[in-house]
Image (cartoon, rainbow, N blue to C red; front, side, top):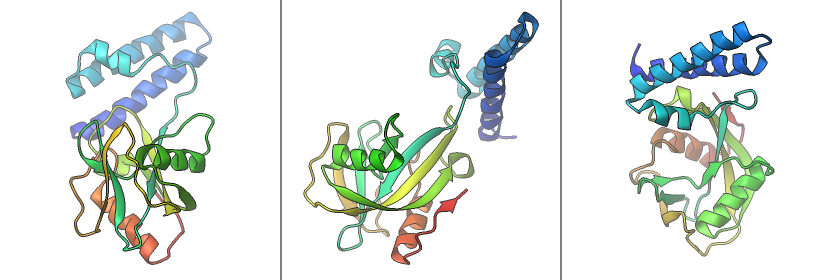
Length: 207
């Protein structure tokens, strides 16, 4: 078992401990699940190389049933069929516009808002292209379990107004993609999404 596979197992172990602590009915069970949670913190610290206190800050005590986080992205094409990408301020690499799902916003509302805030562009959401489980793709390891929803969006405005949280906004040809922020999107995923749009295949790919 490699470190990535081990990390996935440890996420499951941590989730089991969290659920156990939430629903334990007696002190004996609570103590056992507390030990299991502390064990998962130690193991995650060992696998990641991060200090225990950092691990605990990343994984605060669960107040409700643990669920996957949802990352929402949008694929939009220029009139020349080039792909709209934003340059992320956190790592200086490129990604599809988007971010974490917002409480109180539908997935469509979230991606419309992300396009407006990051690029200044207005879009019409046309189709859900894919639901990726990051575990099945070659993303860098991360502590959270993440589903990634990607929508096909048609541009209804065309003048960029770069947001404060991105470094740049540009179009790129599919065969000339820049260095991608692989925690957010992979070249193989963009190629799959692009092919679906270009072939008018609007059935959602689901892992």
